[in-house]
Image 1 (cartoon, rainbow, N blue to C red):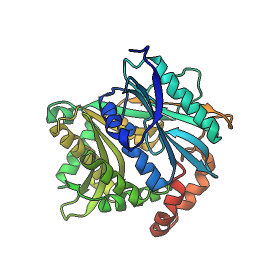
Image 2: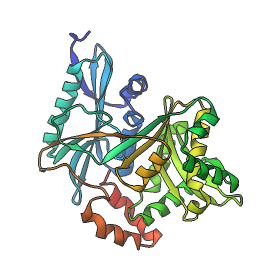
Image 3: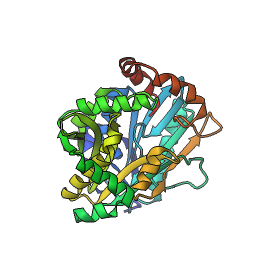
Image 4: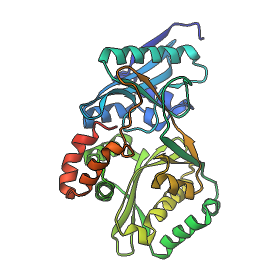
Length: 349
């Protein structure tokens, strides 16, 4: 099989069904390898995309989704994949090293042709020990146990007490058909943290593109006031809470803790087996929160090919050079921040 000719192609409309079938079956693939991301990144953020796949005897054996991000502020990059925490090459177990090598060679040729400063692979696991690597990010993944009460008991005592506090406060969770309540909470939350909000259209496009695999859960108090909300992805037997927002009052009522418990409870009822708590920066509040839930950090292997820069980029709020910007952004009225945010954040990814 591995002696048959290996071809590298770009995804077009006729290939989408078999691309997604490969992603669903490939153990290395993630939700962020699905073909719908191509249209979302093009339509919402206006970035050029290059979704590559390796094919042998008419069968896809490896995929590599890429997008070009060009910014005066943050540089010029080819990334797999902006706005996604996981990416890089996903290859079938029997694909052989040749398929990976061919896709990498195609990506490098593309990167050089575009004149980017760097090529970035957001790998779950390392592929190249000698490549420069970003060490800031980790992910948190944990098994969902078959019995609901076992999942509650698996939460460390102090965090479990917060979940029970939310229950005592009469909080309820609801599944939203749209993104209105979610976006209001999300936009307010990121403004308090001094970072621009992604456009509401982005979240609407996610819902439209992924259907039941993209779900919004909102927590309300007994009077029906929205307090906390999370947009999650479902992929195979996993649930991935991905974007979230909270009202200022959520902390006192333990709405945030209740929210993630309700998501875990509902995922357990659906038969999910993995709770992917998502990416966090080492040493931040979200990093500590996830550890308090009993999740252990797993380093992410973001690997780089550098062409026109000497070090890996640090386009994140932890970079000291952005502190003045963060302080200024926190003082903006929400309407102004929501209007300006999409023009800035489209170049962050």
